[in-house]
Amino acid sequence: MAISRVHSTVGPRKAPVWLASMAVLVLAGAAALSHAQQGAWRPERPVEIIIPSAAGSSLDAAARMIQRSLTENRLVEPSVLVVNKPGGGGNIAAAYMDQHAGDPHYLLLSAMSLLNNHILGLSRTNYDSYTPIAMLYSEDMTMVVGPDSPLKTGRDVMEKLRSDPQSLSIAVGFARGGTGHLNTAMVAKAMGADAKRLKTVQFQGNSQALAAVMGGHVDLSSMSFAQAWTQSQAGKLRILGVAAGKRGDGPLANIPTWKEQGFDVEFQNTRFMLGTKGISEAQTAFWDNALKQALESGQWKAMAEKNHYIPYYVGRKETPKRLGLLYSQLKDALSDVGMAK
Figure (cartoon, rainbow, N blue to C red):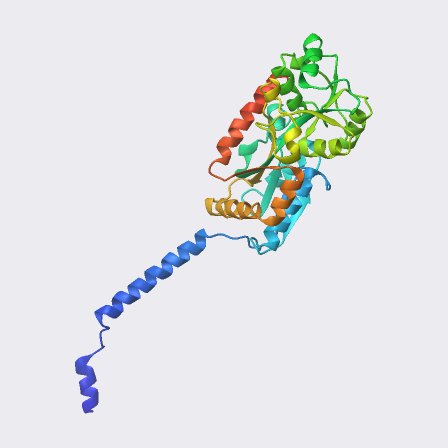
């Protein structure tokens, strides 16, 4: 009974002040950790890298190397898939992305055709229809001739095109208004020729265009430097000029730029990664960081060197501005050939 009276007199014990303060700190720390964990997003299920071209294309090869680098270097824990959505000038890939708006598990590895199609009025989709994440790499563009062509330098081409823009037939890839056509138009304009009157020829595939120029069925062809370099080393083509800011290193030092031949042309075919519309800053930041690390890997660097890619990584904060500048450049070039809407 005495013990009972003592307990009833004293009542509940109070915790020391220092212990209460510690509890507050622990709770605050837990809240901060929870907030940080919420901000540090990571993929929770398989990721798809969408490309608007068929398997075996140069864009497909790049996507599969990015896939390999992301997974082998454990930058992404779930599986990463490359999904080919060719056709419709990129519109099929765009429609697929649109079905997954707000989902950060879908990425679009895009070529400049996305911008071209919008300028041409062939698509309502533009780079700002999505979430720009990063610009990844570029490829210099060239003009080539067959090994036995009488055209030896850029000046030979200039003299022909100035006197008659229809005097030379030029292979420009799959379609007028594409990257190959724009490269041709920029070179012709710098030479003082009428880019609207050029005699351009389209082919169903790169192999057909290559066969045509190598066989002398067309006078010139516009193509990426990597493709031109491979064929030139085999003695099947000659490179007249490259639309680069300066000459390359090593054996590439023998290839003249247009600028040093007196024509102010610098043009690269740029590849970039987009997320779906409406993803969060934390999700965009994750992909920016992961892609940057993927392109710093040994696997990617080996491929880039082999294919003469130009390192061009630009992160999420600067990418929208750079894409806007690129859009303006492409629009000016398409206006020169009378195709911009």
